[in-house]
Image (cartoon, rainbow, N blue to C red; front, side, top):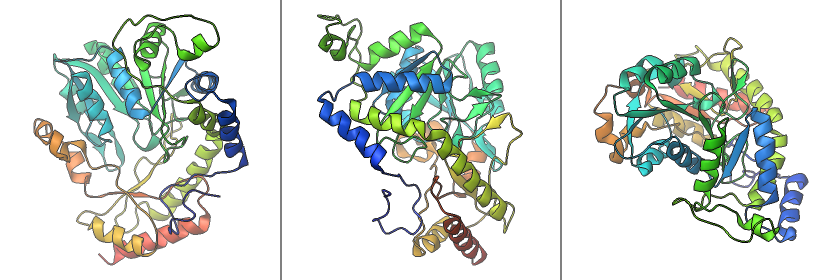
Length: 386
């Protein structure tokens, strides 16, 4: 069974497989009678840390919470600036604002690579800059060597937004382990979906301690600790949040983590079919290419760049008529009313030029070759009639 099987799409944008292994894990957890953060969350943290090769992993309620806590843990606050690409989900900027800091938007490289441009990152740094928030767009690692060099030269923290990139790697190291802190999302459309949830990984023990305090009200012990008799009380040492993950979603996460590499491999094959059929055809571009082996993508998104002057709404409508779901990842953050004034402070020529041309095609591991052919046929038909 799949989650989109009854929604009317011939080819949904993403889909979730629901089988006995998944439902049995949930039922077992519910029947255990312990639903708030406990042993399954601890197990998921351990398994995810081992998967990434990170000493510490902290499970949280969602990807936005992971960004918020990571930025707080590295010291972002009022008067600070954080540099990030505007071609990004708005949660990244919102998380910065909620620390009291201010987002500063940088540009992307171009149609062939939709990741941040390190040269523009360097240009965006000011004396007020506290951190660089580096998104691995669509699961393709950004140039972390250049990002870290800028950070080292300027004394800045590096927070990786690896929401798209579980299992992606840069020079053999997993995304999320390349800066001070790495942040992941387990939203329903992600490679590792649990509904809502997130994870933070770090190699810094003090940061990990800070993250665990911030996650649960600043309390020095957890309810699960007290339930097991490992503690009889608690102190509150800072003003934290309730960003805890629950046991049911952790149980789902353990099943999904066991399937992640298989899912990523299947996505890579499907992305290759798209690339072979579309890249360079009728003015279309598939960003990122196959890489050179030093950057391995998780293939979270299949994004195509439409020809200059193309009417994206018409293209999407044509695919919609064929019951093929598409999306846009993303409207640039500086295009939204809340952040428009910040976008006017720095030129973002590549982001602005590509904003109306990017289109996200269906991509998930169980997508059939016939469905891929149907998407390709519909897209090329729509583009040729523009």
